[in-house]
Length: 329
Ligand code: 13P
Ligand code: SF4
Image (cartoon, rainbow, N blue to C red; front, side, top):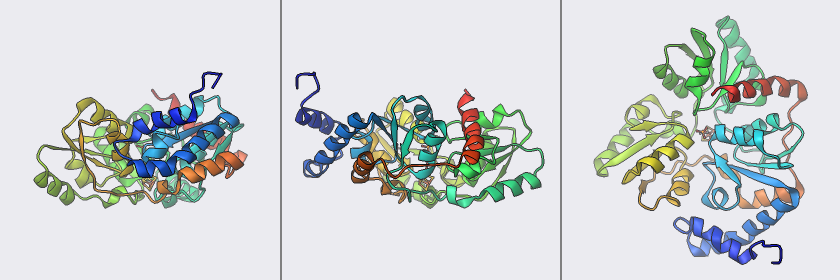
């Protein structure tokens, strides 16, 4: 390799070292050719792969250039100078990337990768809420369609929800669509929170009883939860935060045994990096996140399809709501 590019086999074994704790060699042998092909296509297309923390380890550690929670992915999408963005995550994440990069090609390897929260609310519902609560600004979780974002004043993620709500200087805020995240925010602020009835189909399955049983069975267990979990689960947890904040907590506190109450691939991704921590894994998979595979990432890099498009009139308003969020420090 005269230009200093590592030989593909050397590159592959360096990649395998990142995941050897969580992917056995026979499984790696199956993934390796597709990963090398993805690396080659990314160079050819001047493309980046942005992967959410819930992607499987072979995507998260070996195909992605940038990884993170919804907030980090939005920030990275706003900053990249690649011509093509592949969003290894769900549809609303790819749509957010497109809003911030209208001139770029944004690919979502499976357009059916949805989200129960995004499906729980329509633009009409938001307009009705505004009529019911006149004067209250609307804060919309990024887990929504661009059309719903377009009806909002500002977006938020689970990583910045309290700061966003407080940045508005209002006594009352309409907070949509996740009821449990809204409850959690209401506990952290004096602002009155008006909520909707949306739930995440993955996080709503955890129960407080389940956490108590794990604590009884596992000595010294530390429980870390995502705020999309029901209130009794959050009450029974030691730390609550966005997926990136959960990872940050584990990496800096190094609990001997930890239970991450979120999508189960995230435990694998963190376990690959922290050999001194044992993970207890109730495996709640997000069926939407799991639609993204190495194969469809490779296919979309090859065909530059399927692309995300947002009608210009919706995009202009929705972009404003996302940009206002990114401006909140
Ligand atoms: P984060 O923003 O915390 O990554 O959450 C996104 C998500 O979809 C959680 O289910
Ligand atoms: Fe949506 Fe829940 Fe899946 Fe996240 S985990 S994408 S909130 S359904």
